[in-house]
Image (cartoon, rainbow, N blue to C red; front, side):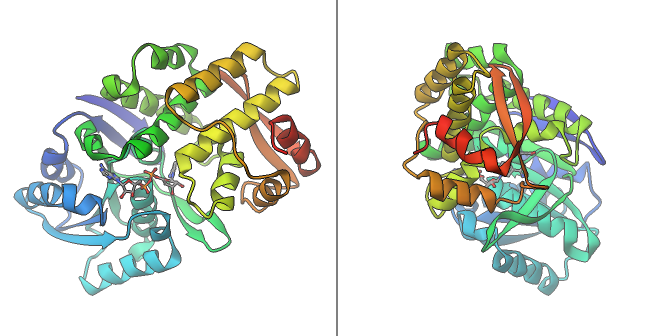
Length: 352
Ligand code: NAD
Ligand code: GLY
């Protein structure tokens, strides 16, 4: 097992290791005096891991409640949030209790948002069961729900009390979802660690899961420690996300988040190459890595659709988009870009 100490507005540990799911009770007990633990899990994850988590929590003396949510992005909605709050209130859960997000980024974002607002805030624990959640969304305290007008438009910065990542839970993850997590892993290499990036070509991510997750969490920990509230450095984690969110939105969320991020990284790196901001070998290395993990590098959505979706994104402020642009593998810049220049970037990135 590995342990990463995160130091933000709240200090907490991220534990990564096989068998942690069955130790959830004792591990959660070590960080809370709560009487009730509410496990929030999707309708696919609950049957796989809900009872194991609940049994461990019961053995540690918690009253355990399970709140099931639908799988998929639609759970991260005002209605999904309302249903969770209603469940907490009806079951007389109070702010001294603890919420447990058992699942992927959708479950984590929704549960974290409810934890940060229910009775003005209560503890929550993340138990990520997707690779994406393990390396990214379960750490750093961004919580969110979507509005009909866009993704993640309501949310808080609210750190978990603990993150327990049991890589064995990823065994049941559909291949396509696993690959989405690989896109986020590749992202870490591009934005800050060329050696790590190279290691992903030497050894498949699946064969070095615990090390890869730990390394990504350490990288995120270092970024969050310097910029918890996303005012500067943390925006590097949005590499591929400006175009990616637009691809997701254009597809009505049928393109998965990690697939969209892969396309977004490819588009922005193509544009960087065309604009003379990075060398050809940087673009080639990225495209080769995305293809190695069978991730998409192109989209059929056109200039009009994508630019409209990007301009609707909440990250636009003061007429400027903050594009994350690779200079080389392991180094990216945050480039404030006037909206009038967006189409030029997209065109350079191969969007027609
Ligand atoms: P997800 O939560 O929708 O999970 C993907 C699918 O896998 C779901 O159908 C789920 O039921 C299923 N699943 C989960 N774990 C499983 C397992 N072990 N076995 C079998 N099936 C399993 O998707 P995701 O990719 O984990 O997260 C995407 C979400 O995360 C998006 O909403 C995105 O905005 C958000 N996100 C948040 C942050 C953050 O910092 N808060 C960062 C990145 C992404
Ligand atoms: N996944 C982006 C962030 O945590 O900032």
